Image (cartoon, rainbow, N blue to C red; front, side, top):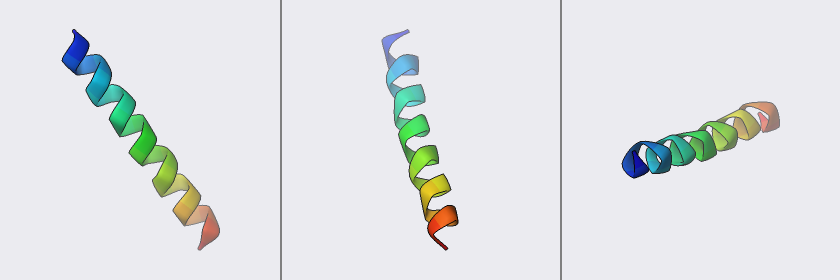
Length: 25
């Protein structure tokens, strides 16, 4: 359960960065 939460949090962080990068471009 802890692993899933950590993985989900990391994925969300990467997704946010990708969205910001797309908007920047």
